[in-house]
Picture 1: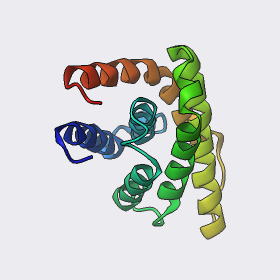
Picture 2: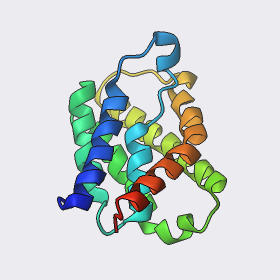
Picture 3: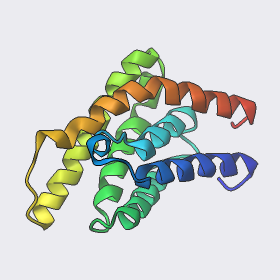
Picture 4: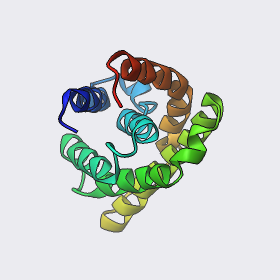
Length: 159
């Protein structure tokens, strides 16, 4: 993964990490999309032999450190979501971009629910409906992120 092609993949993942921690107004922050999950899912669909569950776990662990959450919570949820994608990548590839967006929405909801359940198990967290607001923005952004990353992949001939 650390060839020239791997560098571009790593760069897109680092940009997604930065987007995940960029300060936003409180009124909009509840709708922050799951940038890291979107980018990981794209690379898992495009190159499942290069980006896999281990990559997802590492990115989730880094996200835990950046967000200051309990170590392993985001890593576990991210690895589980990417596992579902990697196992079904050939099926998901055949869907249209809008159908993929709905699948990504289900994965995003699953990701947030796993994070909630793990945090609930470890501490006293209360579930609020606005906890799932990022699912909406993730669904809306998937087609554009998909097209952008596909263009990056083709431009740099990442295979």
